[in-house]
Length: 481
Image (cartoon, rainbow, N blue to C red; front, side, top):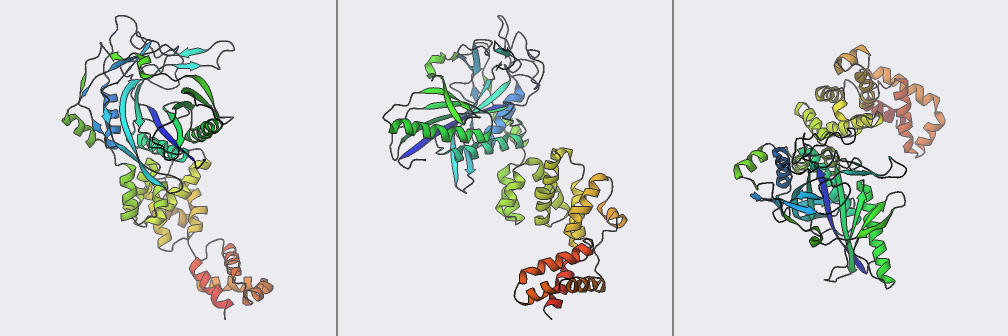
């Protein structure tokens, strides 16, 4: 980015709440249903129909507010946001305007470069989703699927505290992780259950006057949020440097080209003609209800990260990898409840198990082994019964094939136990050293890196069963005698 300019970025994140029914009607919200099969007279806004509050949606929205240390508004009113678009069946959207459910709050982030900061929130308000325009189903016409219309949303609106695409990336990543921990949304941007709009402007470094704001939409992945922001910052700076003026507009993002494109002139608030929703009574949120919601919340990533680093002694990197996914964090905790070798448990979850899951396109809920079995494998390694190489390369795959077996049973059945017989290992060491006399000479002339080659050869000939510690000692003793 040009050092003479600075960017001012605010994000609006729309989060589709995982409820069985819509925000103000009993229509189903199942993703992937046949177009226009989950609609009714209420969600289509037919005359004479009346909306009704969805308590589950309110509970999930409050969970998000509490997780982000927001103030919860006690008397919540709804408004109609009026605009015409084909995917808005009623001609207006029911939303919160002057009484958002949650206000203030912060989101702590850390960029990939290790920069930490807090992003302030203006509000989190409730509203209903629109339908979906489908541009690729017909050669000549845009079709509209109203299944999504009326699905409950919350919109998280930040202060313009974000300065770079990297910070925006970190913010959206944290929000997605949080909604998944809270189980209020699956966070799937490709399916549209989490959507991000970015308001971007640039100004001369040190200026107190913000530049003209441009809103960018249609970013269907977190990486595309960063790409769109980076491009838009560059585009606006280039316009200003060439003596032009940035237009206040709404732009889309072309993921293939990595560029933004003009969609329409940016609307002002008064263009929407907000007025109070006449068919919905206010929602009253009591302190008792807030505390009930709070009691049902899970431990959040920050709490787990603190415990994993301060109590379990993991590095911040190892802990971050674990808490990035709720299932992984809980699986790890179940292992260490049985075996206190925290580092080994972390490696098994983050490297061995995750590698297997990625290779087979599975998630942890589909994993056939239990935390007890992984804890037992670690115990077998710690006790010297098997070594890590045998455990990960032979025992683990066999256990996957026979998930009802115990690791100890398979070690005995497959004869995988480490061989601690010194005379057996000494014999293999002699074989290797006699076979590679020129390498022995090179080692004695200072090429000590060959030590690994000798040990590897011994381990290979023992089929991985020689005790690595004893093998290292015997090889070293023999070479340095």
